[in-house]
Every structure is written in structure tokens, then in C-alpha cells.
Image 1 (cartoon, rainbow, N blue to C red):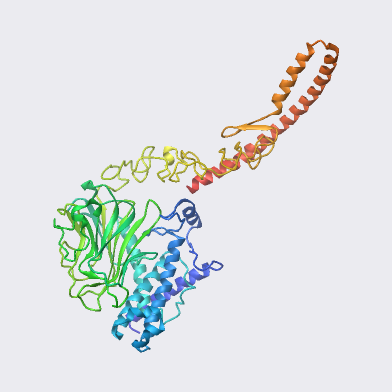
Image 2 (image 1 turned 180 degrees about the vertical axis):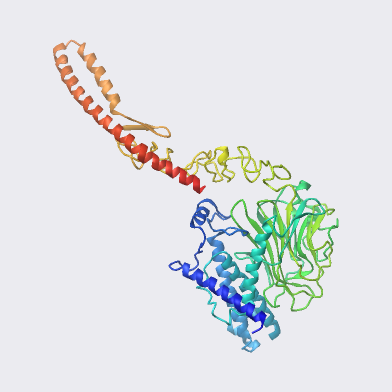
Length: 585
């Protein structure tokens, strides 16, 4: 066994051990449920506090990746199943006459016109994709052992193993790039509008995606897609937030909402950066004359995906195995253009799984709305013909939140949270989804509605009966959950009591009745029937006295009991609930 074979064998062994670990830790879990191997409290906080664009709770958070809900986890599992299915179908063609394929499986229509060599090339692409998805499962601690047996040497072969290892290495390199003191150093771009960081090449193939075009022969077309959040492109130009992009089948997108030269979404003749000719205001992942081939290797397609928790979402447009128009039958290109909600940054992602065409001559980079300014990937030409040596991140200048200088799109920058500025460099505002404890907020659930867990003015976390806030079906809430004080342990008003306000103040309705009775008796005493009234009055007086005595005694007893219970018990418990809820915030 040579050194390369040994390396592959070692990688497969390490990957296999990782999956065995995931399997062991997932005993008793239902297939398809994400397994969080990290701090359980972190996963619990995510489920309580964060949601994606579709209102689904976040259940999976990993550094450097968009946060995922169960919807995303299920999407990855589905992609693994489909990719395994495709590989097995394509491999089956190698043992069957090609003219009989349509009788074997409906998916075989994609293979019409393909020869044995093209099928083998397609399988190679799919093995890269399968390894990429399995690598994502490892990085995110998602158990997929019910979907694939890593001991299956035919399916988990050398190509799949290398793809898994490549993705793990890509993720580690990406994490390093997020550390500005690390090996990836940002530089200010020629436009002065962005800082540019060159990243290690590689790509995380998206799942749970929406298809724009797929193996349908699409050529020189465009589609307008909602971003899902407000995005500010070249902020210094002052065009403001964009909410849609125009995706071109030729590997670029424009912010067409601004009209003019940004409307062009079909141009196959890519230009160098900069050029004032249309299109302008574009992001080019690999702008070239591309086509969605109907039967060439893996499925040519363009998809998009919106993922992550609200406030830190990512919008990705992915070109998957697309081909060069008029090129060979064995080329493919995988690349992405990614927009980030948190800081309006852009990433151009180019996969290491790349088969260049001799006709390739692409443009990689970004250009502003005027066409007179722009920033480039490896270069500013329109003649890139080989896979890029790097991925690229562009971060708007002046949006380094936390540096103490208010610039660019920032509302404020106090080097962290302050009484007037949130830690994301926006002004403090209840309902902005950012809990600012320095400003007196106990919670912030992105609205100003009471009785949904957070007070409408963000002043307190609502924990239910005993928190002092009256929320349906509660009738009262006196800051405790004891009985005998007018508001019982499920926050209903007790018989003989009247409760008002928040927190509730409760009074016995009987105390007013006694006062009225005494007044009436005095009045009767002054009447003509003195003897009867005196007698009745004395009797009533004695009775009232006994009653008052008993009532006072009971009241004192209850007051003592209430103090003993509510101070060290009920109130303390409720206080602890508030503290715990605050810690979870």
C-alpha cells in the first residue's frame, strides 16, 4: 500500500469511528432527529430563543455555519437518500443494455444519449456530492447511520472518503478564516467599499433548496428571487436595502430593483470588472456562457436556499454541475454566491470539484451600480479559464461592529452593548429581537405583544401564574401561587374576594359587609323601638364581636402563613424562575 492509499485508508477509518460515535450516542433516538453532542444547554437555548425564516425553532448551531431547524436537518437526510439512490441507478446502467434503461426506472430518462464514459463521470460527481453531505452530517453532529453503512466498500469508496475528508478540512479552514488574527487577512479592495479576504477553496452543497432550472436546456435566461431579508449592496453608493435578486443562468446575479443596466440578466458575453456597459450592480460567481444540459453527467441545475436564524440568515444561489454552452460533454462547474444578513457581506464560493472546459473564460467578482467601481476575485479580467485557487469574502468597509467607530450602515457603535446601542450596532428598540440588558430589557421576542412569554415593553419575562401579569385564562396574579389570599394557586379569584391590578391586590368582600351592618345597627338603635333594638343590638354586637375576633384570628394566621410561604417559598421560587428565564435569554 503506497502513502496515498494509506492516507485514504486512515481517513476512512477516522470517518468510520466518527459515525460509530454518533450512532452510540443516538441510541433511543428516532431516525432523522438531530443529535446534539455539545452542551445540551446550548441546544435548549436555541430551541427556545431562535427561529428560522419559516418560524421553525433552531435545533442545530455550529460555528461558521447557518443555524438549522428540523426542516434543514430533514433536508440534508433527504439529499443523502436521493444521492445514494442516484448513484445506485447510474451504476446499474453499467450492467444493462442502454436501450432498456427506461424500463428499469423513471429516472433513467436522464441517461438517454449518454455513453458508458459519461455515466462513469456522472457517478464520480455524485460521489463527491455524497461525501460532501456526509461531511456536513459529521460537522453538525447529525446521526445518519440509519441511512448509510460506512462499511459498504462499494458505496463508501475512495472517492466518497476523500470528499468527506475534504469537507472536514474545508470547514476547519473556514473557521480559521473567521478569526481576523488568523492566516486569512482581509485587505481593503480597490473600490474602497469592501475588505476582501481570500479563503480556502471548497463548498458546502446546499440542501432544502428551491430549484430554479434543472437539466432542461435553459440558456440565457433569468429568474427574479426574493432574498428573504434586507440586503445593502455597495452601501456607500446609498441605494439602500435590496429585497430581491435577478439570477442569470450565466452565473451572475443583479439587483434589478434599481432598474437601468441592473435589469440585464441574460448576457452571455461576460465583461471585465469594471465596465459601465450592462449589466451593472452585479455579483459574479462564475459569469460565463453557461447552460443547463439535459443529459450530461450529473444533473445541471440552479437552486437557492435561505437558512439560519432570523437576524443572521444566509441567502445562497448555487450553480450545481452546470456546463459551458458549446463546450465538451465532460465539463462541470459547482459554485455559489452567498449574501449575509448580519453584516451585508458577500462570499463567492467555488468548489474543488471542478472540470474546466477549454472554452471557459469567466468573470469573478462584484461591480457597483454605476459600473465604474468594483472588486474582483482572483483578478479583474473576463478570461478566467481554470478553477479559482480561493473563495472570496467581501465585507463592507465601516461595518466592523464593535470597533467603537460609527461608520457605514451602523446606527451606533459603543464597542459593545450600551444603554442606547445594541451589540449589533443598531439603536436600542424593544421588538428588534435583540435583548439589551444594559438598557433594562429582560427579553425581546421581536414584537410588542403581552402574554407571549415576554412583556410587550420588554421589561420582564412572563413565566405564568405567579409572575404578577394577568394572561388568559388567569383572573388574577398576586406574585405567588398560594391559596387563601384571594388569588389561588392557578390564578383564579377565590370566593369572597375581589382582586384588581397587576400584580393583583386582593381584598375580602366580607369586610365591607361588616361595616355596613354596624352602621345599620346604630341607626336602628336610635329608632322608637329602643328595647328591641337594644337587645338586638347587644346580641348582634356580641355576635359581631365573636365573629370579628374569629375573623381577626384567622386573618392573622393567614397573614403569618402567607409571609412564611410567599417570602421564603412562593416569591423565592418565582424569583428563581425569573432569574433562570433571564439566563436563558
